[in-house]
Length: 372
Image (cartoon, rainbow, N blue to C red):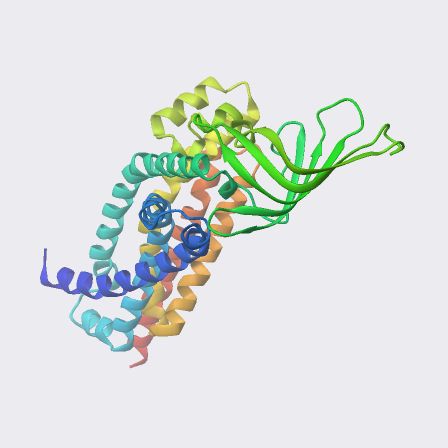
């Protein structure tokens, strides 16, 4: 490796480390308070929550890395241009394409590594997260359910509770509507209650206290029977509430490339299913190559901006937002174009924009040279 390449990579790595830390922090904070709540209010051990966070990191890293590499390219080359080092290189016969060689090579290496990462480590980590979170739910069933919302997942029951209290997750102000019978639904209300699991962990009992059960004689609400109780138990099926047998099956995010390709072949005659598998497969592959394309765009943008700091960050965030907007549009596309083509459009847009930025940078250099 030549001295110039080592110098440029050194300049690039510092903002890359800072950008990666920034984006990882921002994306982790999206989950942080929910994880902190598990420790402070749900009695889940800190080690278990750290394990959950570790399982989340691969998916967060796959999103944060392209963002950080874009920002690093703009900031590093913006700094070089601002300090007239790019001009000095050009005066010595080293043009912008040559200066881009080392960062582009790094982007290619990262892209190939991310391609393997997205097909192996990422699905494994997603599977571990699912198993770990499900084990927490089996031990503390109320973790799965939110306050102040109707819970419809249990067959034959509609549940609602106002809040949870204490580390033992005691439920307060509970309402249960039995919808499974053919007659008028029975309405049960209670001041407090608790979810208790059996040894197998797939059956849960809602133990109610200090409440009433009201049973209409008909659907018009006539001949209402009202019973007050000190304690009452409702048997629920936790496995059904969490997706039935699907909780033990691999989801899309838990499959590697061979499994996704196999599923695509098996579901060719089921349009909605095959579409979901194709989206997952092509999105992971296209995202893996994003680091290469963001560098090819970021280098000329940085040299044109000639500034670092807030301007460089603003440019980077704008490009990243456009990229992920195009990626979202690709996910919702239902036209006749092949799915793989739709997910490569965001990368193609970055590539074309990079070529235009290179052209603009070279044209500026020639114009500046002729004007001196």
